[in-house]
Length: 330
Image (cartoon, rainbow, N blue to C red):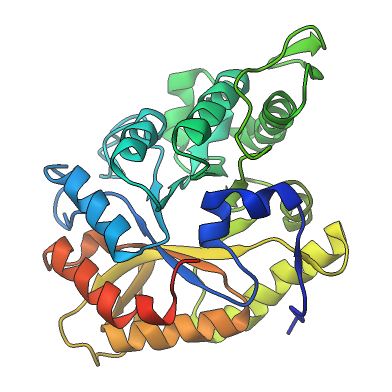
């Protein structure tokens, strides 16, 4: 396994950003929730009835993050609309009602977004939230959505790199220069205002985004993928951390996260089993799995309990009493 001794966060400004600092630290694992904070196993859409009070409850209980998905249109073939609201305005709304919890996207479908506007939105959200934004970026996995935007699905990997280069230049450089055949050009006469409050806003790859692991390790601030089987965790984590060392230099830390659905059953001692896209487990077995993940080198897990059959508030209380004490937010 890759050694973690005295790892340094590769971008020093990120260590100061409250969202990143709350979520990620070498050798430690934290727990976040993928929205909506509501179980709806048999319906494509949640009601969003108590979403503000539930977000405040997650904040009060000490969860590390709330993650919002980017699902612009309802496709009956997929049968899922995420948290209904677009993540950009929704983060701004939740920021006003919460105080500590990180607010993340998992992830913005970057090839469908205009990177100059996205940079303005992200910098604004990071300022308004007091530095709690963590931007997860993906290439999208729904071919049917791309024709709606007039974009060739097969170009999404290339568009991702192009948009990301423009986005980073505009977000972090003063009077940047960039030239893109897709997203415009600037020769240093214009500047984006505001800039992120801590110099940069963390950009995390959610899934491989049609990129090589080497490209992600070099250019992104971290990686969140779907969770492998428990016995594969050490090799999975080691692959990422070794790639970061090779791409960024020995001793550099870029966090690794995993995500998945969670069916949390009432019997706390029920063993963890793999299900499609996630896990079914009692809370004791879940805590044991997370301990194994932490030891393997995983730094965060984003759980989506929407498939559970129990009331969501009850699930949050059980996770807060049985799991979070072992994996506190930083």
